[in-house]
Image (tube, rainbow, N blue to C red):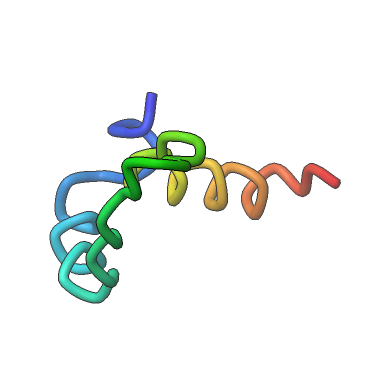
Length: 52
């Protein structure tokens, strides 16, 4: 799904601008992060569709 919303050429331009993920703690690791491309696809979807 994210490949349809975020084409490869757009992702190649945006990926270098994103910061690296911090290292996960072992004692209290928190929730697993969502992949950056999926998060960007969600943002683009909301902006295109006007979802509140």
